[in-house]
Length: 639
Image (tube, rainbow, N blue to C red; front, top):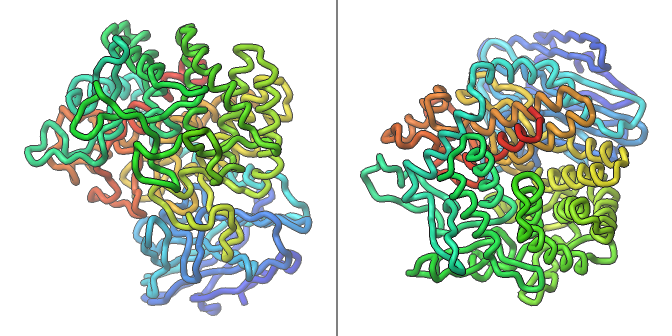
């Protein structure tokens, strides 16, 4: 075998590399990493793969891989190399394997990673792959190599079990690639004011008839943008105006019209635009008009079949394990906690509307009473408010804790504080060490693999299917605990969680990618998005940790996330993106400036001919959300 022995940590093996034609170099770096380069001259070669594997000499207690590979032959493909690494920690040892992303060039056979838990084997190599399902990756049987096979990576080994191994990986990649890539990608971009102007002109002028609904409730004018608008609804499209989902307005953890309206409120105040201010206040009134039953409330309003918003139904998100019907979907404590949290944001940062505090207070009273003996809050509840038995011990509870902690600071309520801290202690003790990041999106969004195995690890990888939304809930909850108690332990615990969140952020700009993705976020270890809209929600929290910890890397990452939040917008300020949109939607024009898909490469591939461009805008999980993230970060002095 090639001279890569490391007996204390494991044994190397290789496939697809001719030892006679292979050259190995090693460079020792100041941060404890070694840069290892394995180059093999091949001329023209067809092989399944070229790869190096390290079979560990210890059994890890903690592992991390960017993507699950539940069946033999599946790989973590280069497409999802946001912050690529394989991490193994256990028995007093740490191994970190990080691909040198600067060595990944357009046109080469793409790289991949794999972790096989039963065989304790880390693998890094090159192999063509195709997406299967939504979205895993199957390695192809044949890869065509030309000239040279290059496998360059950073390796860290230590006779100590690092508590937060993610920090070393994140620092390595950001210092070497992310810092400069983000500077190049965004240095000539305008700030958020231009993109926010595009957003609000799109929603409230050019696309107003499609996007915005205005009606009366209880004698008051209310209104908000619709949950979704499709490219086929463009004023420039002469064909059928295709609608992708049922007409409705949402106030839940993803699609929060109240959160977006708080951004519109900030913008209207900054620009003195009374018309936009009126629209923002209408959306606030709409949120307050949702009926409460003993503190609980629904998250969706829409017209009944054949009707309009003057005779609406109230329902809930259909991203759940029970039903696809908005009317029949059960109430979700997470969605209520998110809405109540943003009621407190509005109350504390925008205007002291006492109705917002009263609404949130009623929810606080009820949800405190629903906490179980371990400290968790339930996930879904039936019409009687009883838990429905799915995800009742999940990190979704951290969002409720974040709400209750902010609520306790506003009201002085010690019972809310005590309840929230008990929940967070349980999440810190049970969820964080296991990396059990399960929430509604993990299983019941578009990626439904393993949804019949909730709470179970995937045997081949020894890890859970994971979604970064619940990581954010937890990092937010711990940050709120720090702001409420002043105990630095919560800030440091939150940093450990935040670093797990940042492992799903793009720490470099891929060679040949036509759209800027550095700083953008993915979603989970079984999906393929780049530049997902959640980045605008995450960014203010990343910036807050950067300020309070005095870490410039977090500040840079937070700002890059905000720029990435607008990088998918169709407008002249994003010339590369604009070109990609027009390759797919040839009828797009000036009236469509501001249209913005929620992510890029959702199905597992991107390309220079529009591949990866999607067909819709969700205002509350796209341009409206991005504007809110920037405006709030600016108002909080984080930029």
